[in-house]
Length: 422
Ligand code: ASP
Image 1 (cartoon, helix red, strand yellow):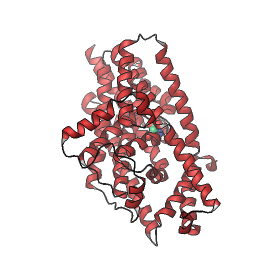
Image 2 (cartoon, protein in one colour; image 1 turned 45 degrees about the horizontal axis):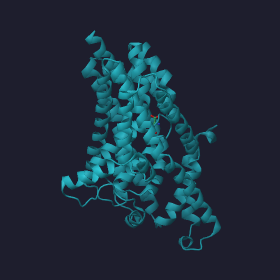
Image 3 (cartoon, helix red, strand yellow; image 1 turned 90 degrees about the vertical axis):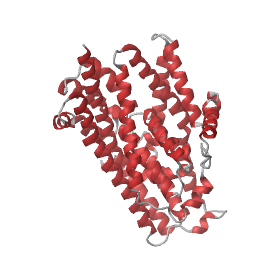
Image 4 (cartoon, protein in one colour; image 1 turned 30 degrees about the horizontal axis):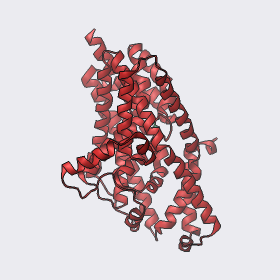
């Protein structure tokens, strides 16, 4: 039973990968010609990372178009659609700000001894040149990247171009096409297909993690005691994510619920405990949706018509826990790889964490595909994702619970405003 559990498999693969490289690995393998066994591990690593990378462009593009259409329809059809969208964006921004502020005060991390060189040799082109001081020059660069034709943006993995195109196309679809247009269904169907493929790739994760970590440990050539130091940093990172996610889930969201609707935080938390537990154990907002809906309408007495538009949309678009995790992770990896984050880069992390949390589907580990987008935008090598994958599964449980809580509090807030306007 436990052997079938993907979290267990991932952890085991991570430990075996690191231990095997530390025990049997030999630096001379890195020189060509390398032994066939090592070449095979590199092959497995490339297979997994390329498969994950393959999905970034289509996934972000279609899932954002789907999200904009969903939001557009809510705004068009319902009186208080604006409240829903303001709530989604507002609470996600609070989560990211919390992450960024905390991470700059508490950052016990130092770069790995060999990480800066690794970062330099693997770094993707930065979206923004860190040396640019003039705001107008930065804006000119950004405008050039944003307004690119959609095909070239998709082909070249120009994230800003993909996001801009998705936004414009999504808004134009809502404004130009009637609700009966087959385009709405088409976008929905394409998203379902992409999510299915993503599900297959996530199943490959244990093999990918083993290979990535084996290679990573070998390349980092950690000496005595350094492996422990990497593990220590990871634990600190995990601890910070858990603490901030709990702060958001146990204090901030209940407080927002209390300030807007007057509902006591204790009552709220006891009413939503069940869906949060389901989210915690499935790591999937979408799989939890039936329980979320039932709790909102039966326990919290939210109007069913409000619940049926706030919750399904929220399950894929409103992910406070995910956004918070991605922001901390980007800063953590930047420290680890010795990459300076300028003010513009931090602003980029903010925006990208927002976009990628909107774009991530409500499935286990789904945000790992979008996470790459945040890394690309600030010039962190994609290989760095390997480090996150080690601790990602256990952290997914708690961030999914907070994602679902955000949707439930949202339904309460929107319901309150709808009723008071009646
Ligand atoms: N597992 C999360 C959810 O379903 C998404 C993620 O952050 O990976 O809400």
